[in-house]
Length: 143
Image (cartoon, rainbow, N blue to C red; front, side, top):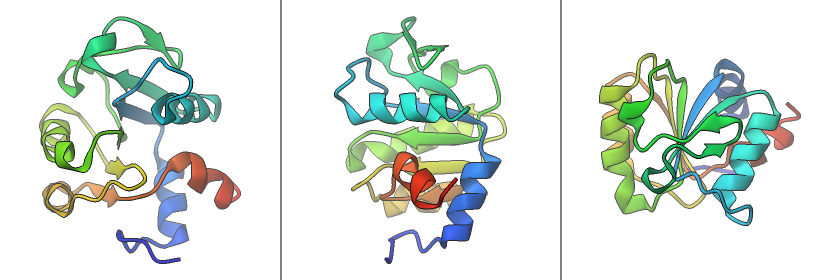
């Protein structure tokens, strides 16, 4: 299986093991939405998942209070997991790189590939995963 990000299984395993706190951009309170399912899965796996959605600010999801933007997060974040359309990814990555302390990884969900945003993140030292889902990768890798 070839992925656009050219990461090996060992790379993905390392990223998922190294990550403890995830900001989930595009979090939805609706259980039928992929962002809700993935957020709940990751929280159940022991990750701290901070939901990000301006329409849901102050509500609780995944055991955390939803914030309106990445700039509202006041703790170190290891990974930003992005559930936004491809054309909306670059401003999210730009905000993440400027607002978040300790950011290590940008993760773009299935069918999301934005090379310009990826290059921006890599230039700032962040690892990038594109067109993948951690809720698929974790069981696939036997983690």
